[in-house]
Length: 176
Image (tube, rainbow, N blue to C red):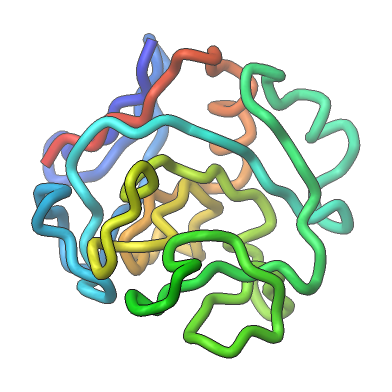
């Protein structure tokens, strides 16, 4: 069964079977995946595998982690984890260790909790096409479901519930 992300009655939601949670997407809406451009603030339309879940062990409890379905690999973040967002870099749209010489995003955030729990999505991963979008994640939403830079985000408890239900073949399907 897939996780469906779509707008219903003017509001974005993620659904899995009969469960529905409010969510948010990119601040500039959606875009067909092949038209996605690095830094455009849009969420790519398409169907994406959830390849791995990363978490901050100091903020996501052992009990919460145990509830996450073992259908997907789960691993702790460390303070030096980053994600390359420089299209010209050979590690574009891949995990890197910080400090890193090219443009990158730091995954260990001190001042916010958005990356306390991250689902890595397969958008632009096989093959990686330079400039077609990086760091498209399923992650914790900012307060009041503030739009993202292109990711899909849910409130922490809803994201934990969703991750407790998914199966290994589940995909995230973003419908524009």
